[in-house]
Amino acid sequence: MFKVALKGLAGRKLRALLTGLAIVLGVAMISGTYVLTDTLKAGFSQIFGSVYKSTDAVITGKSAIGNGNGNGSIAPSFSAALLSKIQKLPDVAEADGGVSDSAQLVGRNGKVVSNGFAPGLAFSVHPNGDQHFNPLVLVAGTWPRGPHQIAIDKSTADKKHYVVGDRIGAIARGPVQQYTISGIVKLGSVSSIGGATMAIFDLPTAQTIFGKQGRYDNIDVAAKQGVSPAKLVAEIKPILPPATQVRSGAEEAAKQTSDTSEFTGVLQKFLLAFGGIALFVGIFVIANTLSITIAQRA
Image 1 (cartoon, rainbow, N blue to C red):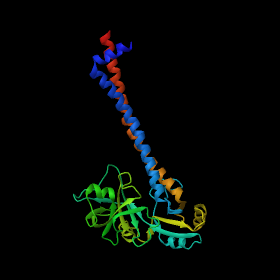
Image 2: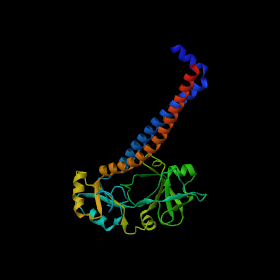
Image 3: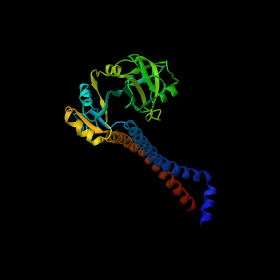
Image 4: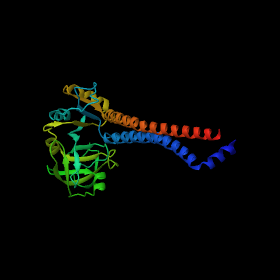
């Protein structure tokens, strides 16, 4: 029987090849989807862990919509006056505020620099600070200073052939503005976050272009030696305004990872749908091939 099957396959080589190809494509699509999404989840988990490794507590805005944690919506900014209150707490060693938003980089051809569906991220930095809470690492140049400078991610710089001193456009809340590239950065050891572009401004510039003068999107806090993150969070909570919330650095990293996992879950379902179509086509091809073979034998 085995010899007869092999002889039949050898006699219809193209048919056997197409049948095998249908099986391989369907299985490869499904397995590849799981490998891709699991790799993305693990990568983002590692990234967010490194972002908050020097942070014991994170204060963010709390959205009026979504669940109690503000998930599922963009958290609002809050008054920068809160920072001075945080810095005066007895167990706080250091605290700093920042702005994070979205901005698209614009290349020399006047088109938005895009990598598929990856977003354009924007962050603020304190160019004269000690960068204790800054997860970004300078690869070349300096941190941006003043309203006409910007730093960009290394991935964009490499792909679009930008170096320190070049001009690049950015779209934030209005028309395209031109900036001089003062520095090129990475996020830890990663050149880009899942293909997202990064635009980095000094804090006053970021507050101006995003309409957040006198406001922060987050305050990062480091505890004094011997003080646990849980104790620091408990100390901060009583002085927070109603529209803000505080989490430990580990909790914030877990939340960011969870939010990202929701996106990768949607991506997984989208790709699995194509994998299902590939498997269905494979089943149809195999069934049709077998029915033709049986008819010929009969």
